[in-house]
Length: 173
Image (cartoon, rainbow, N blue to C red):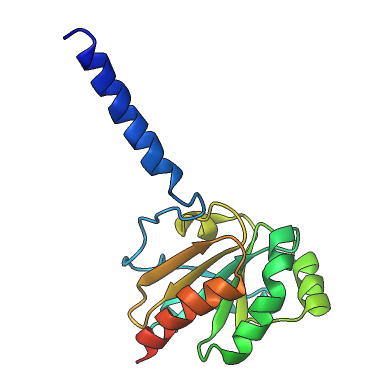
């Protein structure tokens, strides 16, 4: 009996370890899925006098892409984001996260601008409200303002084709 209990505990721990090894570390579950996207009112990146608000986007399906000029992974995803913006059929808004306005504008000038507009989040408060772990991250938000998907990391052709585009088609229907 004194060997059965430790053996049982060991087997249970081994089972939990084996199951956790099958999980994708990039798939961090967000508590915001199916909850209202946090409200924001912040200056536009290119037009500091203009205030962009989440509430102005209600009634349409949209994508929020969190990015920064200092982010190497953002540079990696940018060609896919440019191509996606041309075929998405929904507006893509940028959330420029903890960046310098001049650096971000120069970056978009150099690499192209896939965004309908970008919110300037210099101190990262909006990003905190959205549960941003780092950049890039992408959110799909429905007409009612509910977050339907959060993708952590660079967008790839596979992620766009397999996850984001089918979801957008369902939400637009």
